Image (cartoon, rainbow, N blue to C red):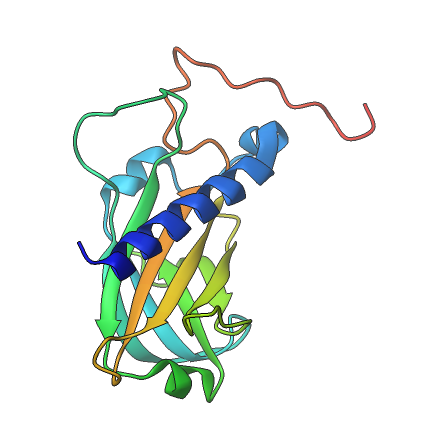
Length: 186
């Protein structure tokens, strides 16, 4: 694993942890359209022209988001994140030169159901990379981030996408119940 990939993985993990942590117990009590079992299905994700409010054509397909496989380690209440890493044949300058968005679909079978989306823009870091937020769509309960970095070849962009279910996804609630949500003002 090269240094850039290690940094992308660390940035993504830290951002997912922050997004999930900020949702809090009140969000866990809400109903989500997708379920934890949906994480077993690869999720298509694309760079589209336009904005999340008005998605245009697919400009670059990204590798499907997938959940990790294998035995759980560490804390039982840890939220699982789905990940995707792709090198696209467009420079980051070209992507930023027009309106683009990253859109996540529920599954290939339900391609018309969007679960998270983020407009591509923001502040470049010292290495010329960009981190964007992916907001929940369709009351899915999923949020995340995408990390876009100039490719080493100077002609591509490395795109890593991370999503997690903010409403307690990935948790076995049968043996490990979440705290009760307190109504606002109550």
